[in-house]
Length: 234
Length: 268
Image 1 (spheres, each protein chain N blue to C red):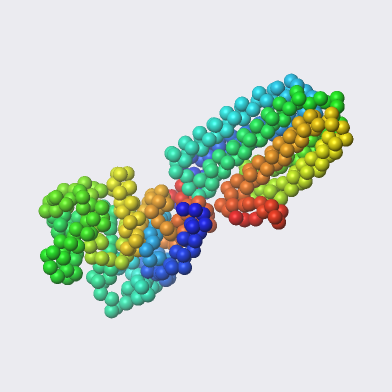
Image 2: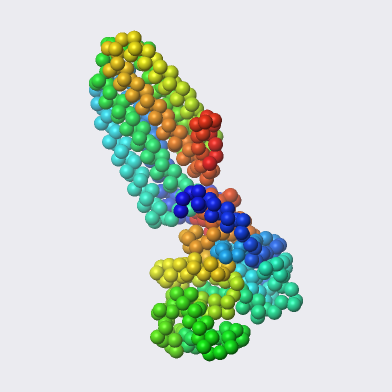
C-alpha cells in the first residue's frame, strides 16, 4: 500500500531523520554566527568578542559528536538503505565540515590579540571582510542545498568556489606588497594572510558540504577538476 | 582491492557476462487473477540475483516459473518465454523432471525427506541414474555435503534421520540434496527465513561459495540479505518488475521511486 505522505512506515525512524537534518541546520547556524563574530572581532579589534567566539567553538564540537553518535546509532539500529543511507552518510560528512569551519572561526578569533590594529590599513580589513562575506554566503548556500536537497544550488556553490579562491590570490598579492613596502608590516600582514587563507579553506568546506548535498539528492559524486576549473561528475 | 583493480575486475566480469536464464514478457495468471505482468529479466551465469518486493508482488511466482513449479498448480497459466541456455523451458519437448534436475530448488522451510541424512542426498542422483556404483554414490554424497558446509557436522551420523538435525543444518542438508543432482541453476525461496542469525550467516557464506559453480536466484524479504549475497537485485511490485540492476546501485541509488520507497520502508 502506498504511503500517501511518503513518510516512513516506522514513524520514529522518520523522526530521527528529521532530527538529524534539524541538528545540521542548527550546527550550520552556529558556525555562521562564529565566522561572522570572528570577522567582526578582527575588524573591530574586539577582544571580548574574540574570546567569546573562541570559547563558543566547544558547542560546535559537541554538536558534531551528537550528530555522529545519532548517525552511528541509526546505522546500527535501522540499517538504512538508498536515500536514507545517503542522508545519514551525508550528515556525517557535513557535520565534519561544519566542525572544521568552527575551528577556522576559533583560529580567526585567536589572531585578534596578535594584530596591531593601529598599524594595519583599513583597506586590508576590507579585503578580509569581503572574503568573509563570500565564504559565509557559500556556507549558507551549501547548507540550503543540503536541507532543501537542491542539486542545482549545490552545483552553483561548487562553481562559485573560484570566486573565493580568486579573492584570496588577490589579497595575497596585496599583503605581499604591504610587507615589501615596510618590513614592520610583516607580522600583522602574515597574521591577516593566515586569516584570508583560513577563510578560503572555509569556502572549500562549503564546497564539500555542497558535494555531500549533491550526493544526497542524486546518489552521484561530484568532483572539482582543477585543470579545467569545472565541476564534473565522478 | 584497489579502485583500479576493482574497475578492471568489473569490466572483465561485464565482458564475460553470459545469460543463463532469461524471461521475456512473462505473464502468470492464477485463474482470473493476473499475478505477473510482462516480466523481462535476464539471469546472469555464476551470479546471485535477489528478487525482492512486498508480499504478493510476484517474486516467488516468477521464481517458480523458472523450473516450472507452477505446473503443479492447476489454475496457473504461464505465458511469455523463459529460456535456459537459450532453450525455451516451456517447449513441449522439454522433460520437466530433467529441467528440475538442471534447475534445483531450496524452499523457505527446510523439508528433508523422512529418511537418513545419507539417503536425503543420495535420493536425487539415484533416481536420475547419475552414478554407476555405491562408491561413486558415496563420493557424490560426501562432496555434496562438503560443498553445503555440513560434512564435518554429520560425517559420523549419516544413517541418522535428516529430521534429527537443527533447522540450519536441515536447510544445508536441503542445499546438499539440491546440489547433488548437479543443477546449473539453484532457486532459493527465502532460504533463511526460519533460521537464526548464525545459521543464516553460514548459509550466506555458502551461497557465496556456490556461486562459483551455480547460478543462484534467491527470493528474500531481508533487504540486508539481498544486499549482502547478491550481485544483481530485481524489485517487484504488484506483479510488475519495477527495477533491476547491480545490487550496490539498487541499495544506494535506486532509479525508480517505488524501489526507493520500498527499500527504505515507505511502502509495504
